[in-house]
Picture (cartoon, rainbow, N blue to C red):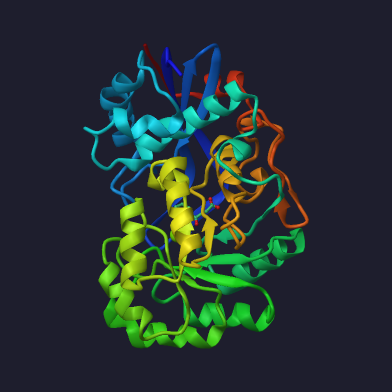
Length: 367
Ligand code: OSB
Ligand code: MG
C-alpha cells in the first residue's frame, strides 16, 4: 500500500447528555478523524485522545501535533507491505499510542477495502453480532441514576457500568444492586482510589460486581496486584494497559483478572490483537471499551470485539446513546443487546463527508 495523502479533521460533537467521571465532566467531544488515501481508496480512523490529559497524557492537541509533525511525514509517500507494518515506519515515535492508532486503524480500513473484505474479517473476527453494555457517568443523585439504569435495561443493554468516586460509590451501588438483583453491573473508578483505601474497597465485595475497573493509578500495577490479594471483586484494568508490554506485566504481576481493551488506547489493531491473543492464552476475559467515539471509531471497536476472546459485553453502545446525529450512515443501532457488524467492505458504514467537512473546526492535508 502506497499512501499518497493523509487528512485530519477536528469535529466538535455535542453529547446528548453530560458525561462525568471521577476526574471531571464533558458536554462535547472534539472528534479527531484521520483519512489515509492510497491505491485509489480511502481508509478512515478516529483518534480517541480527549480534550484534557486526565485519562491519558495524550490530548487532542498533542495527537494533532504528533500526527502532523512526526507520523504523517513518515507515512505519506511511503510503501507499506500491510497495515501491521506501521510500527516499522514509526520506530522513532515513543508512546503517543492514541495518535498512532488514529493512522493505524485507518490503514486497516484501507487494507480491508482494497481486499474487498469487512474490517472484522480483515482483523480476524467472526461475523457475529457483538454483545453490548452501557457506561453511565456520575449522576447528580441516586434517583437519577436508578432511572437511567432502568431505562438502559429496558432498552436491552446486557450490562451496566457505573462511574464511581469516593463519596459516590458503595452506598450508591448497593441501591442499584437492591433494585436490580440479577443485573450484571460493574464500577469504573478511573483511578480515584489508592491502596490505603483497601478497607473501603473491601466493602464492594458484597455487591456481586462483575469487576471493578481501574481503581488505582494508571502507572501502579504493583499496588493493583497488592489490592487484588485483599479483595474478591475481580480487578479490570483500563488506563494501565497502553501496550502489549504493559499487558504482559499486568498479567505477570497478577494486577488484574480482566482487561478492558480499547484499540485507540494501545496503538490500534496490531497491539490489540497481540493483547487479545495473550489474554486468550492466559484465560483472561477481554472486553472492548469505548472513548465516546463517533460512528467511525465505533465501527473499529465493533470489528475488534468480534474476535473470539471478547467474551464480555463491551462499552460499545448505539449511536443515539451518545449523539443527536452521528457522523456515519447508517447509525449504529442496538438490537436485543447487540450491535451488528456492518457488512463490508472496510468499516462498513459511510462517513458523512459533507457533514464532517462543514462541522470541522480544522482540516489539514499532508502529501
Ligand atoms: O474509563 O472507560 C472509561 C469514556 C471516556 C473516557 C474513559 C472512559 C469512558 C467510558 C465510556 O467509560 C465508554 C463509552 O461508552 O464510550
Ligand atoms: Mg475505564
